[in-house]
Amino acid sequence: MKILKERILKDGMVIENGDILKVDSFIDHQVDVALIDKIAKNIIEHLKNKNLLGKINKIITIETSGIVLGTLMADKMQVPLVYARKKVPITLIEPLYSRKIVSPTKKNGVEIVVSSKYLKEDDSVYVVDDFLATGVTSLALMEIMKSAGANIIGFASIIENSFLQGRELLKEKFPDIDIYACVRIKEMHDSGEIIFYD
Image (tube, rainbow, N blue to C red):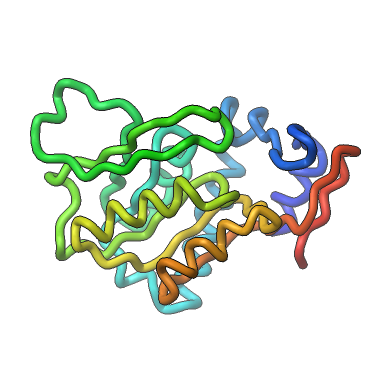
């Protein structure tokens, strides 16, 4: 996705010894909604090309970074958005599906939860998030979907840091799902250099 690559090169910043891409000026803190709208359309076009669009009845993401993308996709697809919570509010009184993860960017352990009220065996879900990096968070989301008996159609991210091998982790556990990223980064360096896959 050319427009996204250009924006990453213009406004992104490589940090943490070349392992993390900081995109908080347009994706993760301040949001360029027009850009995310184009990203949502790009993912939906991918789903159409793969004949998967009509099979999905829910979009799944995790708070907070995936919510904007998930909302725009759910609106265009006319399906509900369900997002996993990182803190359990007192209003979640029904049984929960949960997994514990260590956040790659925050470096702390969190428990992610989804209410059993919003995830059923007859759901065919599509998981979206801002990044696919190590795959730990995405895998936990998919394990929650699997424990609920839902059918996982696939996963999409805005950006994939391919060198962190999250795709391989997901494919090892869920070999049949479709995995898509709007841009795939092959390498990042301390110097700020970013090399994309074509």
